[in-house]
Length: 421
Image (cartoon, rainbow, N blue to C red; front, side):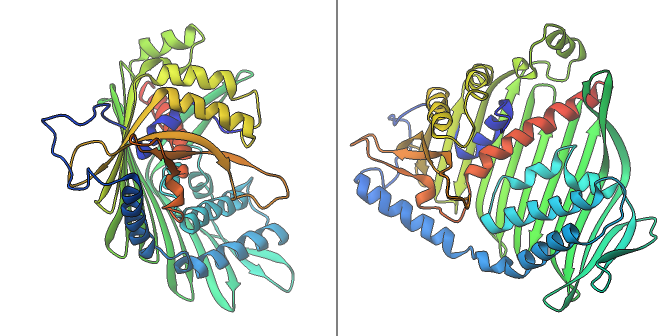
Protein backbone atom coordinates (compact mmCIF):
# COMPACT_ATOMS: atom_id res chain seq x y z
CA UNK A 1 0.00 0.00 0.00
CA UNK A 2 1.21 3.50 -0.80
CA UNK A 3 2.44 5.54 2.13
CA UNK A 4 0.14 8.56 1.82
CA UNK A 5 2.08 10.79 4.19
CA UNK A 6 2.80 14.50 3.92
CA UNK A 7 5.15 13.48 1.20
CA UNK A 8 2.38 13.40 -1.32
CA UNK A 9 1.38 17.01 -0.80
CA UNK A 10 4.60 18.38 -2.19
CA UNK A 11 3.71 16.93 -5.44
CA UNK A 12 0.29 18.14 -5.37
CA UNK A 13 2.54 20.92 -5.98
CA UNK A 14 2.40 19.83 -9.48
CA UNK A 15 -1.30 19.56 -9.71
CA UNK A 16 -2.16 22.74 -8.03
CA UNK A 17 -1.70 25.41 -5.48
CA UNK A 18 -1.48 28.99 -4.54
CA UNK A 19 -4.35 31.43 -4.27
CA UNK A 20 -7.97 31.02 -3.24
CA UNK A 21 -9.02 34.36 -4.68
CA UNK A 22 -11.50 34.76 -7.49
CA UNK A 23 -11.54 37.58 -10.01
CA UNK A 24 -11.32 41.10 -8.61
CA UNK A 25 -10.95 44.61 -10.05
CA UNK A 26 -7.20 44.52 -9.51
CA UNK A 27 -6.59 41.40 -11.57
CA UNK A 28 -5.52 41.19 -15.17
CA UNK A 29 -8.37 39.51 -17.02
CA UNK A 30 -7.64 36.97 -19.72
CA UNK A 31 -9.22 37.64 -23.15
CA UNK A 32 -10.61 34.10 -22.83
CA UNK A 33 -12.45 34.84 -19.57
CA UNK A 34 -15.89 35.03 -21.17
CA UNK A 35 -15.64 31.79 -23.09
CA UNK A 36 -18.41 29.30 -22.40
CA UNK A 37 -17.49 26.04 -20.61
CA UNK A 38 -17.59 24.22 -23.95
CA UNK A 39 -15.27 26.84 -25.45
CA UNK A 40 -12.94 26.52 -22.47
CA UNK A 41 -12.91 22.77 -22.96
CA UNK A 42 -12.07 23.26 -26.63
CA UNK A 43 -9.25 25.66 -25.71
CA UNK A 44 -7.82 23.24 -23.14
CA UNK A 45 -8.13 20.44 -25.67
CA UNK A 46 -6.15 22.54 -28.14
CA UNK A 47 -3.41 23.10 -25.56
CA UNK A 48 -3.45 19.41 -24.67
CA UNK A 49 -3.24 18.26 -28.27
CA UNK A 50 -0.43 20.72 -28.91
CA UNK A 51 1.50 19.26 -25.96
CA UNK A 52 0.79 15.68 -27.03
CA UNK A 53 1.95 16.40 -30.57
CA UNK A 54 5.41 17.05 -29.13
CA UNK A 55 5.53 13.73 -27.25
CA UNK A 56 5.85 10.38 -28.99
CA UNK A 57 6.06 7.24 -26.80
CA UNK A 58 7.65 5.43 -29.76
CA UNK A 59 10.72 7.63 -29.28
CA UNK A 60 11.65 5.28 -26.44
CA UNK A 61 10.81 1.96 -28.14
CA UNK A 62 14.44 0.86 -28.58
CA UNK A 63 15.30 1.79 -24.98
CA UNK A 64 12.28 -0.04 -23.59
CA UNK A 65 13.12 -3.17 -25.61
CA UNK A 66 16.66 -3.17 -24.20
CA UNK A 67 15.36 -2.66 -20.65
CA UNK A 68 12.89 -5.54 -21.04
CA UNK A 69 15.66 -7.80 -22.33
CA UNK A 70 17.93 -6.95 -19.40
CA UNK A 71 15.10 -7.61 -16.99
CA UNK A 72 14.47 -10.98 -18.62
CA UNK A 73 18.12 -12.04 -18.69
CA UNK A 74 18.82 -10.91 -15.15
CA UNK A 75 15.90 -13.05 -14.06
CA UNK A 76 16.63 -16.26 -15.99
CA UNK A 77 20.43 -16.08 -16.14
CA UNK A 78 22.66 -17.14 -13.26
CA UNK A 79 24.04 -13.89 -11.84
CA UNK A 80 26.50 -14.36 -9.01
CA UNK A 81 26.67 -10.92 -7.47
CA UNK A 82 26.73 -9.40 -3.99
CA UNK A 83 23.38 -9.18 -2.25
CA UNK A 84 20.73 -7.54 -4.44
CA UNK A 85 22.90 -5.51 -6.82
CA UNK A 86 21.44 -7.25 -9.86
CA UNK A 87 17.88 -6.70 -8.69
CA UNK A 88 18.67 -3.05 -7.90
CA UNK A 89 19.98 -2.50 -11.43
CA UNK A 90 16.90 -4.18 -12.93
CA UNK A 91 14.54 -2.14 -10.75
CA UNK A 92 16.42 1.04 -11.63
CA UNK A 93 15.98 0.42 -15.35
CA UNK A 94 12.34 -0.50 -14.83
CA UNK A 95 11.84 2.90 -13.15
CA UNK A 96 13.56 4.60 -16.09
CA UNK A 97 11.25 2.75 -18.46
CA UNK A 98 8.18 3.83 -16.51
CA UNK A 99 9.19 7.50 -16.56
CA UNK A 100 9.86 7.40 -20.32
CA UNK A 101 6.93 5.26 -21.44
CA UNK A 102 4.37 7.15 -19.36
CA UNK A 103 6.05 10.58 -19.53
CA UNK A 104 5.80 10.49 -15.74
CA UNK A 105 6.80 13.99 -14.71
CA UNK A 106 7.31 13.23 -11.02
CA UNK A 107 9.05 9.89 -11.42
CA UNK A 108 12.57 11.29 -11.43
CA UNK A 109 12.29 12.52 -7.84
CA UNK A 110 12.35 8.90 -6.65
CA UNK A 111 15.99 8.69 -7.75
CA UNK A 112 16.87 11.13 -4.95
CA UNK A 113 15.54 8.93 -2.18
CA UNK A 114 18.45 7.60 -0.06
CA UNK A 115 17.11 4.06 -0.49
CA UNK A 116 16.77 4.24 -4.29
CA UNK A 117 18.12 1.47 -6.53
CA UNK A 118 20.73 3.68 -8.19
CA UNK A 119 22.56 4.19 -4.89
CA UNK A 120 22.15 0.53 -3.98
CA UNK A 121 23.65 -0.73 -7.24
CA UNK A 122 26.44 1.87 -7.30
CA UNK A 123 27.93 0.34 -4.14
CA UNK A 124 29.17 -2.67 -6.13
CA UNK A 125 31.86 -3.10 -8.79
CA UNK A 126 32.38 -5.62 -11.55
CA UNK A 127 31.67 -6.20 -15.25
CA UNK A 128 29.10 -8.92 -15.91
CA UNK A 129 28.64 -10.28 -19.45
CA UNK A 130 25.72 -12.54 -20.29
CA UNK A 131 26.80 -15.85 -21.86
CA UNK A 132 23.87 -17.33 -23.79
CA UNK A 133 25.64 -20.68 -24.16
CA UNK A 134 25.87 -21.25 -20.41
CA UNK A 135 23.05 -18.94 -19.29
CA UNK A 136 25.57 -17.37 -16.89
CA UNK A 137 26.70 -13.81 -16.35
CA UNK A 138 30.49 -14.05 -16.53
CA UNK A 139 32.31 -11.64 -14.20
CA UNK A 140 35.40 -9.53 -14.89
CA UNK A 141 36.89 -7.53 -12.00
CA UNK A 142 36.53 -3.74 -11.83
CA UNK A 143 37.36 -1.26 -9.09
CA UNK A 144 35.33 1.67 -10.37
CA UNK A 145 32.03 0.68 -12.08
CA UNK A 146 29.24 -1.87 -12.16
CA UNK A 147 28.49 -3.00 -15.72
CA UNK A 148 26.11 -5.44 -17.34
CA UNK A 149 26.73 -6.46 -20.96
CA UNK A 150 24.27 -8.35 -23.13
CA UNK A 151 22.66 -8.35 -26.58
CA UNK A 152 19.29 -6.89 -27.56
CA UNK A 153 17.93 -7.31 -31.10
CA UNK A 154 21.39 -8.29 -32.27
CA UNK A 155 23.05 -5.16 -30.85
CA UNK A 156 25.49 -5.05 -27.91
CA UNK A 157 24.06 -3.27 -24.86
CA UNK A 158 26.00 -1.93 -21.88
CA UNK A 159 24.38 -0.82 -18.63
CA UNK A 160 26.91 1.10 -16.54
CA UNK A 161 26.42 2.36 -12.98
CA UNK A 162 28.98 4.40 -11.04
CA UNK A 163 29.44 6.84 -8.17
CA UNK A 164 31.93 9.51 -7.18
CA UNK A 165 32.62 12.16 -4.56
CA UNK A 166 32.11 12.03 -0.82
CA UNK A 167 29.62 9.56 0.63
CA UNK A 168 27.16 10.54 3.37
CA UNK A 169 25.79 8.03 5.86
CA UNK A 170 22.05 8.56 6.22
CA UNK A 171 20.12 7.05 9.15
CA UNK A 172 16.86 5.58 7.87
CA UNK A 173 15.06 3.90 10.77
CA UNK A 174 15.56 1.69 13.80
CA UNK A 175 13.89 -1.67 14.22
CA UNK A 176 14.32 -4.18 17.05
CA UNK A 177 17.46 -2.41 18.24
CA UNK A 178 19.06 -2.33 14.77
CA UNK A 179 19.78 1.01 13.09
CA UNK A 180 19.32 0.84 9.32
CA UNK A 181 21.36 3.25 7.22
CA UNK A 182 22.06 4.16 3.60
CA UNK A 183 25.24 5.44 1.97
CA UNK A 184 24.50 8.33 -0.36
CA UNK A 185 27.29 9.36 -2.77
CA UNK A 186 27.80 12.95 -3.83
CA UNK A 187 27.34 11.91 -7.46
CA UNK A 188 25.71 8.81 -8.97
CA UNK A 189 25.24 7.96 -12.62
CA UNK A 190 23.68 5.23 -14.77
CA UNK A 191 23.81 4.92 -18.56
CA UNK A 192 22.46 2.47 -21.11
CA UNK A 193 24.13 2.27 -24.52
CA UNK A 194 23.14 0.11 -27.48
CA UNK A 195 25.43 -0.39 -30.45
CA UNK A 196 27.62 2.41 -29.09
CA UNK A 197 24.70 4.89 -28.92
CA UNK A 198 23.64 6.23 -25.52
CA UNK A 199 19.90 5.67 -25.10
CA UNK A 200 19.51 7.02 -21.58
CA UNK A 201 21.47 8.72 -18.85
CA UNK A 202 20.46 9.16 -15.20
CA UNK A 203 22.42 11.42 -12.84
CA UNK A 204 21.83 12.32 -9.20
CA UNK A 205 23.90 15.05 -7.52
CA UNK A 206 23.63 15.61 -3.76
CA UNK A 207 24.92 18.40 -1.56
CA UNK A 208 24.19 18.13 2.18
CA UNK A 209 25.47 20.98 4.34
CA UNK A 210 25.32 20.15 8.05
CA UNK A 211 26.48 23.63 9.09
CA UNK A 212 23.81 25.47 7.12
CA UNK A 213 21.28 22.71 7.73
CA UNK A 214 20.41 22.44 4.03
CA UNK A 215 20.17 19.65 1.46
CA UNK A 216 20.10 19.97 -2.33
CA UNK A 217 19.40 17.08 -4.70
CA UNK A 218 19.29 17.31 -8.51
CA UNK A 219 18.00 14.35 -10.51
CA UNK A 220 18.17 14.32 -14.31
CA UNK A 221 17.01 11.63 -16.74
CA UNK A 222 17.89 12.14 -20.41
CA UNK A 223 16.55 9.82 -23.12
CA UNK A 224 16.43 10.48 -26.87
CA UNK A 225 15.98 14.24 -26.58
CA UNK A 226 13.65 14.06 -23.56
CA UNK A 227 14.99 15.62 -20.35
CA UNK A 228 13.16 14.99 -17.06
CA UNK A 229 14.61 16.98 -14.17
CA UNK A 230 13.81 17.38 -10.49
CA UNK A 231 15.62 19.84 -8.20
CA UNK A 232 14.96 19.53 -4.46
CA UNK A 233 16.07 22.04 -1.80
CA UNK A 234 15.45 21.61 1.94
CA UNK A 235 16.13 24.15 4.70
CA UNK A 236 15.06 24.72 8.28
CA UNK A 237 11.74 26.32 7.32
CA UNK A 238 11.07 25.33 3.74
CA UNK A 239 11.34 22.43 1.29
CA UNK A 240 10.93 23.03 -2.44
CA UNK A 241 11.00 20.93 -5.58
CA UNK A 242 11.04 22.07 -9.20
CA UNK A 243 10.25 19.81 -12.15
CA UNK A 244 10.78 20.32 -15.86
CA UNK A 245 10.02 18.22 -18.92
CA UNK A 246 11.95 19.33 -21.98
CA UNK A 247 11.46 17.62 -25.35
CA UNK A 248 13.85 18.26 -28.22
CA UNK A 249 14.97 21.49 -26.56
CA UNK A 250 11.47 22.85 -25.81
CA UNK A 251 10.00 23.05 -22.30
CA UNK A 252 6.64 21.26 -22.38
CA UNK A 253 5.69 21.23 -18.69
CA UNK A 254 7.15 22.85 -15.60
CA UNK A 255 6.07 22.24 -12.03
CA UNK A 256 6.98 23.63 -8.65
CA UNK A 257 6.14 22.64 -5.08
CA UNK A 258 6.80 24.24 -1.72
CA UNK A 259 6.25 23.07 1.86
CA UNK A 260 6.62 25.40 4.83
CA UNK A 261 7.12 24.57 8.49
CA UNK A 262 8.99 25.57 11.60
CA UNK A 263 12.34 24.40 12.97
CA UNK A 264 12.28 21.49 10.53
CA UNK A 265 15.98 20.85 11.06
CA UNK A 266 16.10 21.72 14.75
CA UNK A 267 17.30 18.71 16.74
CA UNK A 268 15.46 19.55 19.98
CA UNK A 269 12.23 20.19 18.10
CA UNK A 270 12.41 16.95 16.14
CA UNK A 271 13.39 14.92 19.21
CA UNK A 272 10.43 16.40 21.06
CA UNK A 273 8.10 15.21 18.30
CA UNK A 274 9.67 11.75 18.34
CA UNK A 275 9.65 11.47 22.13
CA UNK A 276 5.93 12.21 22.19
CA UNK A 277 5.36 9.46 19.60
CA UNK A 278 4.21 11.94 17.02
CA UNK A 279 5.11 11.94 13.34
CA UNK A 280 7.42 14.28 11.45
CA UNK A 281 4.48 15.88 9.65
CA UNK A 282 3.69 17.63 12.96
CA UNK A 283 6.47 20.09 12.01
CA UNK A 284 4.91 21.10 8.70
CA UNK A 285 2.47 23.86 7.84
CA UNK A 286 1.03 24.74 4.45
CA UNK A 287 1.98 23.60 0.97
CA UNK A 288 1.68 25.22 -2.45
CA UNK A 289 2.11 23.92 -5.98
CA UNK A 290 1.89 24.94 -9.60
CA UNK A 291 1.95 23.32 -13.05
CA UNK A 292 2.55 25.26 -16.27
CA UNK A 293 1.67 23.54 -19.56
CA UNK A 294 3.34 24.97 -22.68
CA UNK A 295 3.26 28.38 -20.98
CA UNK A 296 -0.43 28.60 -21.92
CA UNK A 297 -2.34 27.04 -19.02
CA UNK A 298 -1.45 27.11 -15.33
CA UNK A 299 -2.91 24.97 -12.56
CA UNK A 300 -2.33 26.22 -9.02
CA UNK A 301 -3.23 24.73 -5.69
CA UNK A 302 -2.95 25.18 -1.97
CA UNK A 303 -3.19 23.03 1.16
CA UNK A 304 -3.43 25.11 4.32
CA UNK A 305 -2.50 22.31 6.73
CA UNK A 306 -0.43 19.31 5.74
CA UNK A 307 -0.76 17.99 9.29
CA UNK A 308 -4.56 17.92 9.16
CA UNK A 309 -4.48 16.33 5.72
CA UNK A 310 -2.07 13.64 6.92
CA UNK A 311 -4.14 12.93 10.02
CA UNK A 312 -7.25 12.36 7.89
CA UNK A 313 -5.36 10.13 5.47
CA UNK A 314 -4.04 8.07 8.38
CA UNK A 315 -7.64 7.22 9.27
CA UNK A 316 -8.35 5.64 5.88
CA UNK A 317 -5.08 4.43 4.40
CA UNK A 318 -5.08 1.06 6.18
CA UNK A 319 -8.82 0.48 5.93
CA UNK A 320 -9.08 -0.48 2.26
CA UNK A 321 -6.69 -1.68 -0.48
CA UNK A 322 -5.33 1.43 -2.20
CA UNK A 323 -6.55 0.24 -5.61
CA UNK A 324 -10.14 -0.27 -4.41
CA UNK A 325 -13.06 2.00 -5.25
CA UNK A 326 -13.83 2.50 -1.54
CA UNK A 327 -10.32 3.72 -0.76
CA UNK A 328 -10.20 6.14 -3.68
CA UNK A 329 -13.68 7.49 -2.94
CA UNK A 330 -12.52 8.28 0.60
CA UNK A 331 -9.23 9.71 -0.64
CA UNK A 332 -11.11 11.98 -3.06
CA UNK A 333 -13.21 13.27 -0.17
CA UNK A 334 -10.08 14.18 1.79
CA UNK A 335 -8.46 15.86 -1.22
CA UNK A 336 -11.61 17.87 -1.94
CA UNK A 337 -11.73 19.04 1.67
CA UNK A 338 -8.09 20.11 2.01
CA UNK A 339 -6.81 20.97 -1.46
CA UNK A 340 -7.94 24.12 -3.21
CA UNK A 341 -6.97 24.32 -6.87
CA UNK A 342 -7.59 26.76 -9.69
CA UNK A 343 -7.00 27.01 -13.44
CA UNK A 344 -5.62 30.10 -15.16
CA UNK A 345 -4.55 31.03 -18.65
CA UNK A 346 -1.11 32.61 -18.74
CA UNK A 347 -2.42 35.79 -20.40
CA UNK A 348 -4.48 36.68 -17.31
CA UNK A 349 -4.57 36.16 -13.56
CA UNK A 350 -8.29 35.61 -13.01
CA UNK A 351 -9.57 32.15 -12.12
CA UNK A 352 -11.13 30.26 -15.02
CA UNK A 353 -12.13 27.10 -13.18
CA UNK A 354 -11.57 25.20 -9.95
CA UNK A 355 -10.08 21.77 -9.34
CA UNK A 356 -11.71 18.81 -7.70
CA UNK A 357 -10.93 15.13 -7.24
CA UNK A 358 -12.77 11.92 -8.05
CA UNK A 359 -12.09 8.19 -8.13
CA UNK A 360 -11.54 6.58 -11.52
CA UNK A 361 -10.68 3.24 -13.08
CA UNK A 362 -6.92 2.73 -13.45
CA UNK A 363 -6.20 1.16 -16.85
CA UNK A 364 -2.48 0.83 -16.11
CA UNK A 365 -2.99 -2.67 -14.69
CA UNK A 366 -3.50 -5.57 -17.09
CA UNK A 367 -5.88 -7.80 -15.15
CA UNK A 368 -9.41 -9.19 -15.18
CA UNK A 369 -9.96 -7.26 -11.95
CA UNK A 370 -10.86 -3.59 -11.92
CA UNK A 371 -8.42 -1.26 -10.17
CA UNK A 372 -9.06 2.33 -9.14
CA UNK A 373 -7.07 5.51 -8.62
CA UNK A 374 -7.81 9.17 -7.87
CA UNK A 375 -7.74 11.82 -10.59
CA UNK A 376 -7.99 15.61 -10.73
CA UNK A 377 -10.96 17.16 -12.53
CA UNK A 378 -11.64 20.70 -13.74
CA UNK A 379 -14.97 22.19 -12.60
CA UNK A 380 -16.44 25.26 -14.32
CA UNK A 381 -18.37 27.53 -11.97
CA UNK A 382 -20.95 28.60 -14.57
CA UNK A 383 -22.60 25.20 -14.92
CA UNK A 384 -20.60 22.89 -12.59
CA UNK A 385 -19.60 20.80 -15.59
CA UNK A 386 -16.39 18.88 -15.08
CA UNK A 387 -13.90 16.72 -16.93
CA UNK A 388 -10.73 14.85 -16.14
CA UNK A 389 -7.39 16.59 -16.65
CA UNK A 390 -5.95 13.33 -17.90
CA UNK A 391 -8.67 13.10 -20.55
CA UNK A 392 -6.93 15.95 -22.36
CA UNK A 393 -3.36 15.19 -21.38
CA UNK A 394 -3.51 11.43 -21.79
CA UNK A 395 0.14 10.77 -22.50
CA UNK A 396 1.45 12.94 -19.65
CA UNK A 397 1.00 11.24 -16.30
CA UNK A 398 0.12 13.96 -13.79
CA UNK A 399 -0.95 11.37 -11.24
CA UNK A 400 2.69 10.31 -11.09
CA UNK A 401 3.42 13.69 -9.58
CA UNK A 402 1.19 12.87 -6.65
CA UNK A 403 3.02 9.59 -6.15
CA UNK A 404 6.39 11.29 -6.41
CA UNK A 405 5.59 13.57 -3.50
CA UNK A 406 5.70 10.53 -1.29
CA UNK A 407 9.31 9.96 -2.24
CA UNK A 408 10.04 13.66 -1.92
CA UNK A 409 8.97 13.61 1.71
CA UNK A 410 11.00 10.47 2.32
CA UNK A 411 14.01 12.28 0.90
CA UNK A 412 13.38 15.29 3.09
CA UNK A 413 12.98 13.30 6.28
CA UNK A 414 16.07 11.16 5.60
CA UNK A 415 18.34 14.06 4.70
CA UNK A 416 16.92 16.05 7.58
CA UNK A 417 17.98 13.28 9.95
CA UNK A 418 21.49 13.40 8.51
CA UNK A 419 21.72 17.13 9.20
CA UNK A 420 21.26 16.40 12.89
CA UNK A 421 24.22 14.01 13.08
